[in-house]
Length: 236
Image (cartoon, rainbow, N blue to C red):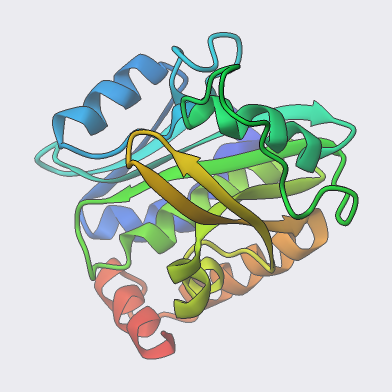
């Protein structure tokens, strides 16, 4: 999903123009080894679904924002895949991501048979902001939403812990419209169970969110990064 795609670049341009006024530029690439190594170098967790060791055939694409000194400010990743039942797929890949083996009990989500999302899915995650309080993650998720909508996905989805729901950040920062509990799963790396939620939006909901965010940027006076951040802080 390169930014050399003229149609995609035009959709991203209102966001990129604002970021450029703050000395920030975007890199989009599918070298997920680079993505994982970069995050590991900052001591950050790398979501297994975007690591070639776990998803060798489809590790995804990453987006990263840098300042004029080439310092990483924020990044996240996404991948697209076809499915007849996303919840069923999650039952298969999430235990694998949590390093379960065939000796572990089979994990079943609380959503099995309740929610069916199918078609081309844009699965987002791995959001890491190294500039807390700057609202840079809001721009990063907007970029991901635009890229995946351009790819024609039927749904955009991801996982979120309970604190993302109670704080409202799954909406205000990540831009999702819906949240459903997947249940708790044992994460071997952490040594305990964690409650995980499926957050998601339909294509129409995503386009509404994108339009709303672009309107915020368009209404900034003067039209620059500093003014945009001030407006976002006032809204959130």
